[in-house]
Image (cartoon, rainbow, N blue to C red):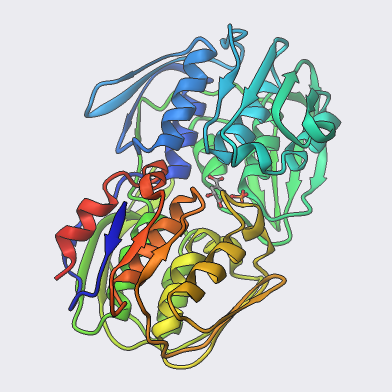
Length: 426
Ligand code: S3P
C-alpha cells in the first residue's frame, strides 16, 4: 500500500515515462504498416503491454529489446484470426482502437477486459463501426465487452461524433483505412489528434481542419523509427504538486506538448502558476519540450466544457491542488469522467471528503472550496490509476499520512511513480 505525507517542496529534474496514447498507437499502426518499426521511449505500463499482447495474438511479431520495441509490420491485411480471446486488460484505448482495426478484418475476434473495462461503454465505437459494415456483438446489445467482432468489406461514413473522444474518432479513422470512399469524423470540440498525426507520418491519405478529419482507403508504410515523448498526463501529477508547493523547482524533460493535450499548462497558469517551456522540437509531427515549474500559492479557477478534452485525464490532480488554492474552483462539462476507469467524479469527491476537503459533487463535475486543511486517512483507489496518484499527491499536503488501498493499479500508466516521487520530494 502506497502512503504519502507532507513534504517541504518538490525539487529536481525528471523524465517521465512515454506517452500512453502515443505508445498504443505506435504498436497498433506499426503492426498494420508494411515493414519493421522501432519504437523508442515506449511506455511499459500495463495498458500498453495489453496492446502488445493483443497484436501478438493477431500474429504480429513484437519484441522488447530494452532500448526499443521492434514490430514486424505486416500491412493492413497481415493480421491473423486469433486462436483465443484477446485481453485488453484495463485499457479503453486498446479495446476501442483495436475494434476499429478489427472492423476491417474478415475473421472473427473476441475482445475482453478486466472488470472495470467490462463496465465501460462500447456502443460509442460499435454504433459507427456497424454503420460502416462490421458485425459487432457483445453484452447489453453490443455495448459491453466481451465484444465479438467480425469485420469485412467496409464503406465510408460521415460521422458527427456525439462525444469528443479520441478513442471514438480513432476507431472510425482506423476502420476508414479499410473503407471504400472518404471516411469523415466530425467533433464539436477537437479531441487529442495523435492518431491523425501518426497516420499522416505513415503515409495515409488524411486531411484535418474545420472540426473534421477525412481519411481515404490507404496503405501504411513504416517510418522505421517512432520516438514516443514523455506523457504530459503523467507529468501532470508532478507539475501540479510543484506548482502548488511554494519554493518548489522542478524540470520535466522531453514531455509531449501536443496542443490537444496541454490544457493542464493553461489551467495551472490560470491558477497563477509559474511555468516555462524550453527546448521545444518536433518528432513524428508531435511537439516535445521541457517544462519548468516554480511553486507558489495558487488561486482557484473555473474549468468548463471547452477545454475539457485537452485535460480530461488531469481533472483528479487539478481537484487536489484546487483544495489548497486560495478561493473556490468550479469544474463543469466533465460528464465523460463518469465513464473512465472509475466514475472519477464520484471517486474523487468521496475520497477528498475523507481527507476533510470541502467538495460538492455536481452532475457534470465538482465544486471545491479553497484553503482546505487536508487531514490524513486511508483512501480507496477504485482500481483507477489516476485516482490513486491524485490521492498520493493529496498526501503531500496532509497533516497525517494518506494511505492508498489498491495502489498497484498505478502500474497501468506509471510504474515508476512512487520512485520518482521519492526522488523529488524534499
Ligand atoms: C485516450 C483518449 C481519452 C483519454 C484516455 C486516452 C486515447 O479517452 O481519456 O486516457 O489514447 O485516445 P476518450 O477518447 O474516451 O475521451
